[in-house]
Image (cartoon, rainbow, N blue to C red; front, top):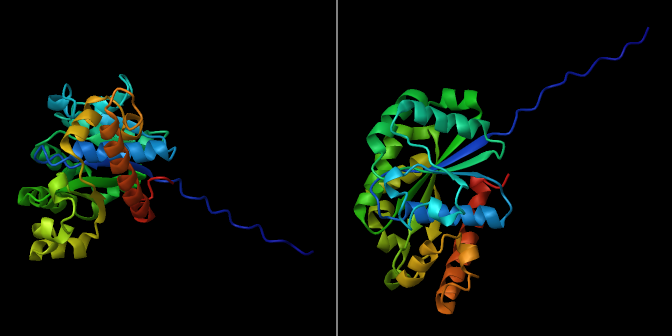
Amino acid sequence: MKTTATPTVVPSRPPLNTLLFTSGGKGGPGKSVSLVGAADWLAVRGRAFIALDCDQENKNKKSSFANSFPEGMVGRPDLRTEAACDKLLITAAEAKTGLVLADLPANSGSDFLAWWRKVGTPENLAALNLRVIMLGVITSEPSTFDSVMDWAEVLQGSATYMLCLNRRHASRSEMPLEELMPEYFASEEGRAFRAALHPVEVEIPAMQEKAMAAMLASGQLPSVAANSPGIFVLDRTRIRSWAAQLHANLDAAEKTLHLLD
């Protein structure tokens, strides 16, 4: 009797969920603004996500991550306990959207990284079917690269590094990034970091300070604020240009980040 072999069915691996969080280093370089820009890009592209603002000290400020969303749309976990940190990973691993954006508190480094050493291992992340993207920000200030290095020493290869190269001030908008950020591009430590961890670099354009303040005060994501009648028309133009440039930069980075999958 002729028999037909039964094909072996190999179950496909479920898609990875993604946790994108800001490195909670020194406040001021633009981590929240960079995450707001990424959230805006995702929203315009139709990608659903869960937004978490973990910065308890910044929650009433117009520059907070949560301020760019309608009230009630952003979770506010307090990461000052290990249980809360555990919950952050669990939330990301179980999110039906497949993507969680979390803005960590400024200066949260030591506590969060001590916890990460214990639980953020590649083995644990693989068991959770979770990938992690760390959003760090580099400016002309040397301390910003130092902060990224502090986190990289702990995260090592357990995370993908999304480095936002933030021009910040319009007065330096035409200066080559290599000259604006020599600690990152020209130092031996910077070259070693890039060679070992292959960060995905996203340039954050400069924006005139008055327009940036209007965008942050609006309580809206940039692409919405750019069309808001409550913002002066020239500021709306500047916001629209900033968002368009940032979106184009994120489109290029998407080839590696895969945030729209």
